[in-house]
Image (cartoon, rainbow, N blue to C red; front, side, top):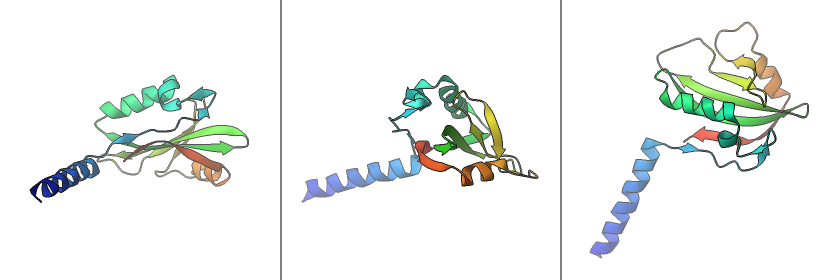
Length: 128
């Protein structure tokens, strides 16, 4: 009986630690923008993820893939630490060109138009 309690305590401890610490998750294996595993093999995207890891002002929350008029569009979203009313995301082409900034106090948020007229394909990366 004591070993069962010990095992349960260990499993619960690991579960709680994982839930509160969070982790980065990128299990997208499909080909995107002509490469497999884009979060590792698209240099600009990998560099963006690495830069967020060392940022003291923002935390990357997700990277999503959309199809807009047969073109892959990559949406990155982030949370800002102690900063308000500025964009908290952006849409990018496969080459890393920023198409639009998303959110914040903008007269017109083009992201909403593009995303509302796109097909969501999959999550490429997310902070859990």
